[in-house]
Length: 600
Image (cartoon, rainbow, N blue to C red; front, side, top):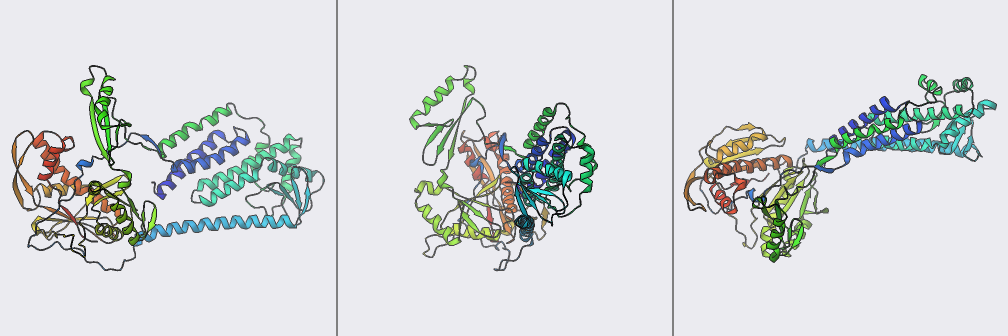
């Protein structure tokens, strides 16, 4: 989902382009009705295009879940000093970074309410004026005459007229305002006014409203002159009118006394190819769709030589999207193979992917203010724990060990609020957790909390200083890396954190202990490898934003995977992602992901 700032920027860009197109190609070159429609549609389209989500571009590579490392369970204790955890107060502080977005949202709402209120006041004034006026039904319109109307105007089907309009002048004025009524100009003004109230931050909306009023006056002038009125007489009538109360959302003779208006009175022919000019807007709309609306689509099969078998958590199987039973697998593969040319059959590959059932992935969302929802339903922490416990009991033991909970949050949500949800998951216990924000995600294993009956025993990991690398993410998202055996800390960009992790795990940095272990490879070879005892300790401030926490977790995984990539190429002469399950397990044992989290 786009941020409000990005939406506003793209909205202003789209409206700027479409209004510039109107000014250069359409104004004074196409009929008045087409100009009015274009201005209204241009503002509406500019607001809609940035809000669209059209999956067109090729999908990003799918996440290989088998390559996502999980934390190793520890059963060893050591007598060295423990990793110091940040000391925090139990009372949640006030975070200016959370207050600012709330203030901006409140300010936007206040401006909208003020503008709509002023709009309602003007409507009420016109309604009161109509009730006090002398009404005459003239068929196509209703004439409302009152002494307080100093300048004639029309609103919806009513023409408002004051004293002093007699004879030929009265006829010209009524003909002008009747044109506004006939073309429903007031309805267009109301629509543009409401759009301006809601999207007040875009100056191009107000410019479009002014241009719409201008073209409406041009159209009314043209109707009067086409009806037989003398040009000089009509211009003198305009000059003779006095300025008085005339709401912006009404149509009246006191608007647009400009040189352009008088010039347009003598223009009764349009430029050539008016229709082609309107068609010229289509490429610009298409370009803005590509820029602001088109996104990546879901991944598809690579080519006709690749068949994909998907296995759901309930055992259901599909072959290239078609339902299939286990005993039909060979027949499906043979049929697919027959579709290929003889020279291509040897290149055919079959991919097998397992997918958890939708019911095995509850989705928890944590708001920036700490509010929690489960699958869209807002709950308290106690209600969340109760529902997840009940859901877990409905799962079979096999599914129960494989399922995971997905935790999503606003980017600015403080980690203290996320930690409260994690404690709920530990008590249940639901141990596999997928942190997610936008398109970024990472899977971790949560250590369960001890139960009162002692059924769950947790062995606390107390690593030696020399084996520990502390990664601290503060409230501003800044990352500090520190070897606990060294008192100095180093500030590193988030993009360089994975490199620091891989250097520590591979032994290039620090003095972490390493234990020689022997591994039997599937081809019969035996290799010795120094397995690092280094542990990465991730600590966060209570107000560390959630997106920075997820980025740090991803960097930790990427750091360990860099070392695994090097081992895979050394042992099997291919990348880690290309290994078989058996080969990947061996590399995972040689480079286990040892990472722990401290409480915020």
